[in-house]
Image 1 (cartoon, rainbow, N blue to C red):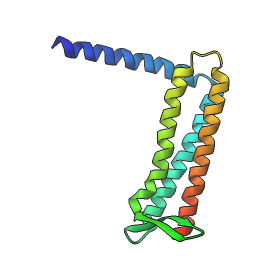
Image 2 (spheres, one colour):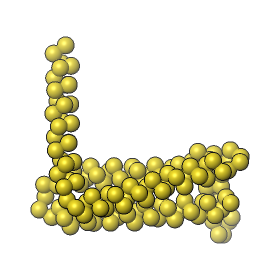
Image 3 (cartoon, rainbow, N blue to C red):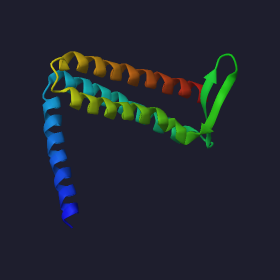
Length: 137
């Protein structure tokens, strides 16, 4: 029983430290602005994937088109949600990386770099989702 109490104590200490780091991360104005913009783009990706999922009549969707060979990837329409999920995974990875880098001296440069990369990644994911839309409709 004592073992589980120690695990619970360590877990609550970890959560408290994580909350303090998150509050410290979101105190910086440009981080809040970047994350707001990134979350809005990702929500738009989820909406676009759901829109295509609900509009495709059959269970199969064309997921990739190659100019040389034509359609080269066909799959179930649930795979449309992989693009927004990939964006969300990168958001979580970058947030964890920023939490580790918050105590560094060059935090501002690294956070600009990581958050700009994340914005570009989500924009390119949106463009790829739009190309899948053009292929299917």
